[in-house]
Image (cartoon, rainbow, N blue to C red):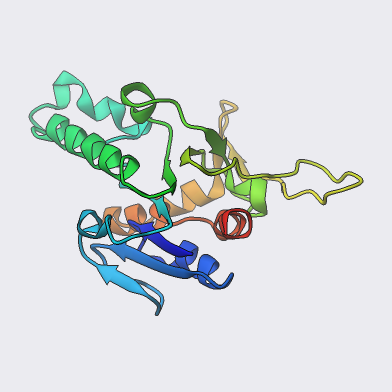
Length: 210
């Protein structure tokens, strides 16, 4: 298949599909971190290039629920254009979703898309697919089945779940070690690192959708 990996600079998902024999191309405003087929530019300009499938990772900065506090009135002076940036981010998501591509997956964390569009078809975690991290990930799907993951061994399947590596605070709250480690990075590098797809999820997408 001819597959577009939209808003990906890491090459992780692209390379997982290439490994299965597909013609996969990533696209992002940033250059690719791995050598491979990549278009550096605006993905909206190539949506109509006869793709069979698109897996998209639109920026979540203005969409995620974790950023809701910055929309409070007391932060208006600090972030004067944040409401407009959220509207632009929603519009970008919906333009990807409405692309004339037969098979589509759009990934984002829990956020406003569930309200302004619809609830996701599936919510997954990296530890469902072998990476011992917790990162709640929503998938909006078009003509794609839910990703299969196995909690425990049975007669037919081996489990894919592993135990997530968590840190427990004194008040009982837990946080993923991946999330804690990335907090130490400068803001731009932290944003880049947190946008990357875990290898186990990428492999599951390629194995099951490819």
